[in-house]
Image (cartoon, rainbow, N blue to C red):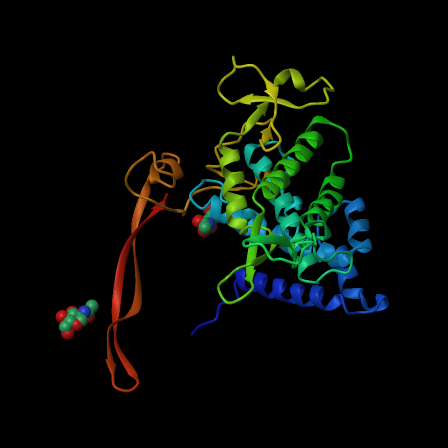
Length: 363
Ligand SMILES: *[C@@H]1O[C@H](CO)[C@@H](O)[C@H](O)[C@H]1NC(C)=O
Ligand SMILES: *[C@@H]1O[C@H](CO)[C@@H](O)[C@H](O)[C@H]1NC(C)=O
């Protein structure tokens, strides 16, 4: 097999090294925490305040970077059929906030703020419960020892126990590490913090309860339950739905220093601006088409993208994705094992078949 050391591979190696470094650091005495300190210095685009949080709590910061990478991966999944597909965030840095799109006020920027804030809280909450961090452990608030005073076990009684993911600490660290970027008290910073909060609030509302039965086999006289963070895909899909109905910040807000941000659905100029609900995303700048290459908006253009032939309204359709430039059909052949037969015992013989597929590519 031919190994290609492409960007993705290097990136995975980087992440693995990163994970090793971050999990090992917990056990190291202070003077050996060099690797984390180095990480804090090397990651691009951190503000001075972020660097100081990073030096103060290097193990939690390392987990935060993992959470942000998870968010970028999810972004790529959620936007795989969009013109802007998050690909520009990957090779840059472990820190998505270093990229150009995060300096803008697009709907996409709002989505990324919410997703990365949720990703950091999610990763840290889990890491606390897994014992990977010095500064936190299982969520203590989830624990309630309840004893039946008469010593009789009631059927289906349950109590908090076990080890809950520490959402409170995850959210606190996400605030401490990300919101600190927004020092200037201008509208853009307030919108960024609002979107960070929206992501974290969506994460909170999806926390799950897991339980385990105890007692005579199958009786489940007592259950112990604990809280866990949901699969991150679920959180990302909800934030994606909020992206679709994101609210544009009302013009009159731009100059006023109102405490509550208001917004209205885009395209409905006449509807009144309302205070934005906690889980809504806000934006203030119309997105570009993302059709052409433009580093200023982190757009790689759509030329060369695989698109879907057929219904034009479908996401990823060649009509939408290729921006009217049209598409070309190219033949992609690969060799696959086929017609496999099993011989007793234990051998499988396969033929090698050429598999030709036509795929559509944007011009
Ligand atoms: C995203 O877009 C880039 C640039 O157009 C392209 O190279 C990449 O393959 C796309 N990624 C996916 C998952 O389609
Ligand atoms: C699989 O085997 C069958 C019968 O031996 C043959 O007709 C067919 O062409 C083979 N398929 C491929 C893809 O080679």
